[in-house]
Image (cartoon, rainbow, N blue to C red):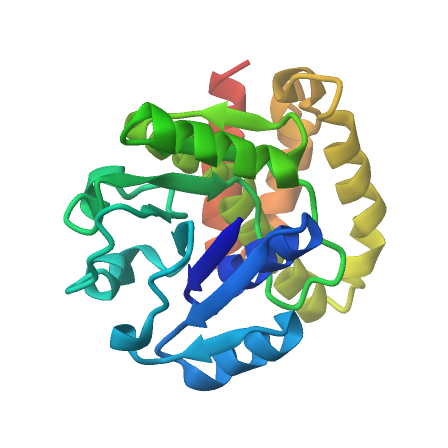
Length: 253
């Protein structure tokens, strides 16, 4: 399949590599960041442009991989009426692309992606299309890079899933940030916690998170909780979260 990628950030870079490995042809990269587009074009032996009027009109599919707030600006004056045009955002309705093409949809990889990744992680792909032809093309494209992990999901389902993804990825990572900051200030090595982090994540593959909950909150170990809160008196942000999460754990038991 001939593909034009619009965008040059994390998602564009990783999906482009996935497509290339699967045998698809990256016909062109368009980005307002000319240097980033040129760098990816060199990697994939293709062409790039930072002029919207120069976007190649001969591709089979146009993948818009930019941040959510930029989609409306990127598609302004873009008209590809008979081409398949999709975006990669979880929280943006597919209908935003209706002025661009008669065949539009969403190609959303549920994974935290970074441009510098050398090993490309597995990720389920959530797809949606304006018509059966578009859905069939996206299903085939998704299966070419994601094996069997391809799920049809409308706008409402994707948005709800994105909420859960923010909780398990972005929020959890922020807790790591706070824990690392606490360790630094207290003269501790955050890396000593990595085996615990890895073991907890591994167990989730075969168990419900609720079954895995441990610690003083679930045990109502008030003595340990009070000792912890006393240690956190100089870390007000972490202390407030400790109290909030302790209450949440105890209420959900």
